[in-house]
Length: 371
Image (cartoon, rainbow, N blue to C red; front, top):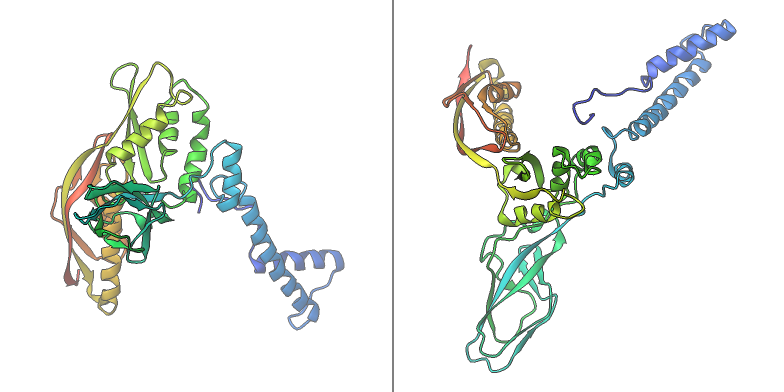
């Protein structure tokens, strides 16, 4: 599928039947022969047409890869390099680990770099060697997940409590912050969007697109950016994280660091990052399945529930997206619901620097319907 809501491109005829027809027409035109169904020469042409179809599919894929709206993987990396826009690499989740030590300890305790902690199948390791002085019974160190990506995120305080390699005098360990900061390698779609925005970054005159480009370059977890200038010379860049998560202070600081570089912003601009305003809403949905679909109602229930959850993520993944439950009703009906009732206000206006987020969302299957 093409990106950016552009129409799909088709360069070549790929249907084997059409290719076979074109070859036979050419043979008749040049030789006057009409090949019968059992003629070995016709069988050869049919096999050749199938081969041509395969090769044309490969060629069309290659031609499409030269378009930003289709490019993937290494081809997209090459396009990014041409625009001085590198793909954002995977990042490692981090946390702070606390050591609780025995009170009768008489020696300083070295903590080697790479000391590991385990939670399930995931490991975190200390970043630097540390020495805990005598008389200190609680000591904090920074630790990083040994695997890149989101796999290391969202372990709650105290959830990491296993020291892999035992150390003397250590009574207990635990993380004192929720693990965060891990990110998978930038996806093709997000990377393509940044490449498309790259020309905006070539200007230092302060265009809106340039601020969006540099904000998104700070982290692949940023899914939406809005730029506002409440007073001349001041720019506020609002960011929204993946799945509609509100940015933390650390996320905002990361964006501000990227935007405050002297090569990025005009000297006259005061730039700061911000989280969007959250518009809370409640949605209560009831739905029915047509009686004639009773034999597959279990499958439809799963499809409708998944569509409902997907809608919630979609709604909170972009700033300025008004809440319009007619969109939800259409999505649920598309997945098999015969009748849908939404027991909530049908429309909620959302400002450009705000995001709508559900505080309560329930969907209930009410049974089969004849109408």
